[in-house]
Image (cartoon, rainbow, N blue to C red):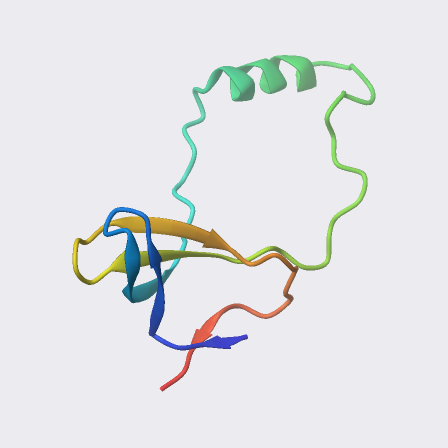
Length: 93
């Protein structure tokens, strides 16, 4: 999916429509020491059989997330597309 590098959208901090720079959201690596990860490792350890919380169906496409940065006040806003896309976001040149 192609999108322009700058979009004019509403900025909640400026309280008006301004130009925003578009960046792709990249998830940072999770810490392996979170409480949920420790609990899941404990459940998976040993001969337990099926463990609660295992995914049975994998979705084909993902909802893309982008970060909009206001060029006036440098405020960042997250925007998620309301539909699932198979292709990664690309910038128009």
